[in-house]
Image (cartoon, rainbow, N blue to C red):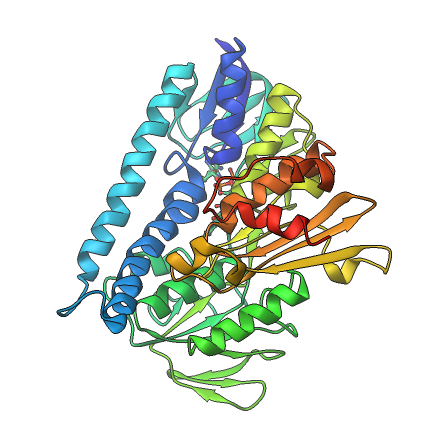
Length: 409
Ligand SMILES: Cc1cc2nc3c(=O)[nH]c(=O)nc-3n(C[C@H](O)[C@H](O)[C@H](O)COP(=O)(O)OP(=O)(O)OC[C@H]3O[C@@H](n4cnc5c(N)ncnc54)[C@H](O)[C@@H]3O)c2cc1C
């Protein structure tokens, strides 16, 4: 019987990245996936939601241009085409991934698998011998008591991808990355959107100034939100919040985090969401890089991105984590010519520094998801604020906002 060097359970970003890097180094790798390669990220998370985002943005952008008189005529969207495009995107990216994994020499077995011994992995059909086991079984949507998913009225982030028509109104429970992203998608499409959050502010894990700005933006966009609140009671489709408010949405999207799927792991390596640390695809990939290539994974330098409108991104210390020895510099996005050209002047770039070192960055802006990497690169390589100022930033860009922020130090 062939003995593989590595047996990996789970074909999401953690599993396939580790598998590909190990195979590239000459190890024999067998990977078990019970559903589709790409895991949550590619099939039910990062990729399909960004496809929805793009479609909804195009529509909202066209409406804005119509109102400004730059476009004329009437604008409509065909939701069936939005769904078609999302499915096609996922399928295209998945095919490319399947090919890349195959080309690396990873053997993929499409079956549910479990650890059956110190060096064995079992499916319903067969048992495989491996020298080392990696568990990369990912996570699933967290359900809360009283709000059990039924796929019709109370939806998980998986269910919402399969809705065939848009609701007229939605209640989103939770204002983390998934809740904020869907608030953007729904409100772009003109769905009456309400968010309920149990914490004091939207995006409770963010810098408080960021959260407060997002609350202001939500008000401008007429996205209703309730803070320090939650669902008390559901009767038919009538929802009573703890505060006593009554909401009657067409659907409820519960986005209150995810639960690790971790079968008994023994002393085996656990990577990605299954290890219950930071539940992000790029953290899963970073962990796989650490495991397979020995590239250290510094948890303090993992960027966070939330695809709100505008995008929100941060890394490092938040203002509420800092004492007076830190300096805060903030540049409103209105300072950037490119932002005016793009009609995207909402937001700011905020840097937190100490002794000329950048210790934190919090950005609300178009392209924030890319901008954060400039700061990340500086922080990871101890590039001081003064050194970063020496870089020639192209004009007009959002990136030059980083220079503009630094010179205000
Ligand atoms: C709506 C949504 C949007 C998201 N957006 C982003 C984003 O923009 N950026 C970001 O960084 N992260 C995002 N995430 C999070 C990201 O998807 C996860 O962090 C990432 O997928 C974790 O990768 P993983 O490999 O650990 O697990 P998963 O991607 O969950 O993969 C685990 C795989 O293991 C398989 N599996 C489980 N048990 C078994 C078994 N016993 N046998 C065989 N196979 C098994 C599963 O079928 C699955 O394919 C989003 C998540 C959601 C839900």
